[in-house]
Image 1 (cartoon, rainbow, N blue to C red):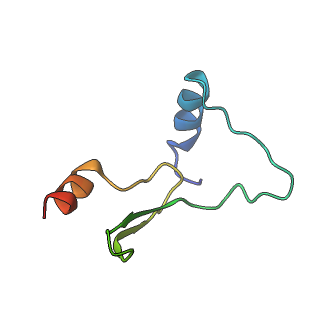
Image 2: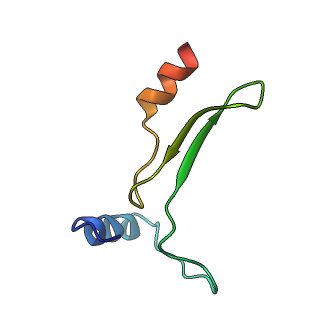
Length: 67
C-alpha cells in the first residue's frame, strides 16, 4: 500500500467499477496470493503478492499448464 503508484491504481480501478468496499473487521492491508492447483490437488505454483495489485503472471500459468 505504501508504493507511490498505489493511489493511482486504486483510482483507475474505482473508475472502472472496482471500488474498494470497506467491510467491518477486515484488514485492508492484506496481500493477495494466487495458487495453481494440479489435478492431483498439489500446489504447482504459489505466488505471494508484494503489493495489492501483484498477481501471478498469465505467462507463468500458461507455461505451467503446457508442461
